[in-house]
Image 1 (cartoon, rainbow, N blue to C red):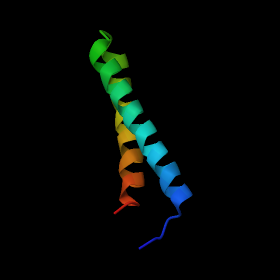
Image 2 (image 1 turned 120 degrees about the vertical axis):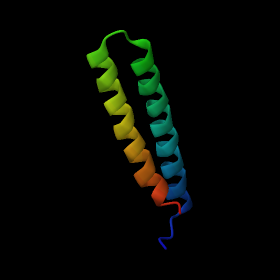
Image 3 (image 1 turned 90 degrees about the vertical axis):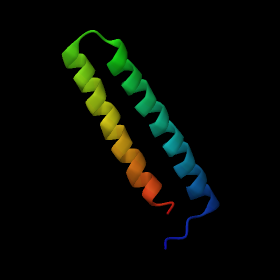
Image 4 (image 1 turned 180 degrees about the horizontal axis):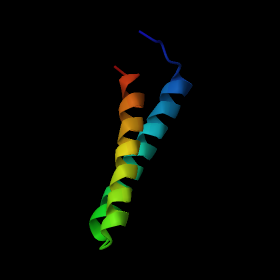
Length: 61
């Protein structure tokens, strides 16, 4: 298992929080827009940020 420093854990925590914020933002935008193409694009972006979150979270296991 990889040993992370306190600073690395803090940075990872901040990045995870940022990704969660972006996931929520783009999911909300996808639901609020009336444009189907734009909604799909926002959903794709949210999924990409979810992937980033999942990869980073894996380092904490």
